[in-house]
Image 1 (cartoon, one colour):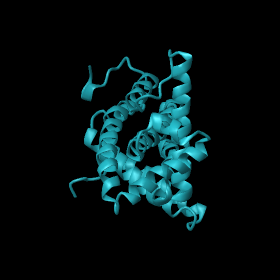
Image 2 (cartoon, rainbow, N blue to C red; image 1 turned 45 degrees about the horizontal axis):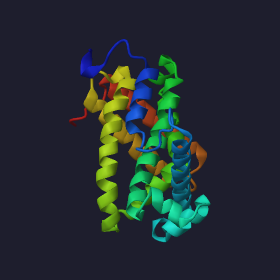
Image 3 (cartoon, rainbow, N blue to C red; image 1 turned 180 degrees about the vertical axis):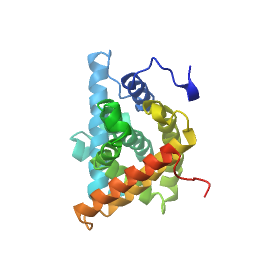
Image 4 (cartoon, rainbow, N blue to C red; image 1 turned 90 degrees about the vertical axis):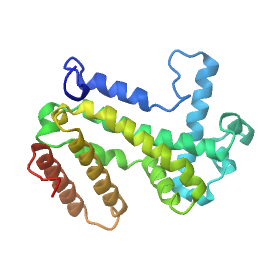
Length: 234
């Protein structure tokens, strides 16, 4: 066992698979299951995809279980069999959207060679792509709505924080170049997410050239942070 729990025999591929297994929402793994269980998983995924579509199209305030059932093409009773309340469904949507984002990100990181990941900071573009999805649009809708809806906040905030901590603890191992500085990695991930989320919000009003420049600058500053050229204390 190496620094910060790194094991030299673990490949980035193995690490990514393990991280995704920990982030995978409960009840969505159909591997090794019988036909009935696989059908149940397919129905749950259809419901979650319908909820995501509803959230990004209509917003949280107009999202109802009836509308989600209609979009999913199932009866409301069938949906309630899987998710008894809107709160149960929203909790699963949060888990699912976080999982899908990290699935895109980690799959992209697994495909990178070390020079692309370390010298060219190609992970920035992969992270940017992971945010331009219906799942992340739904996640942002929930995050914004939770600011003014205390009932949603009770569901969203603790779940989002727990998932972020899990993702941070596991994905660090996919970046052995950060093995010497766990706090620096946490700061880099927070900085990247904050910057790219802000860029996403302004995507339709900023020219593409400005967006590329921001992402390039983000990569340069994170590289400086990793090399110790930025004083975090200052």
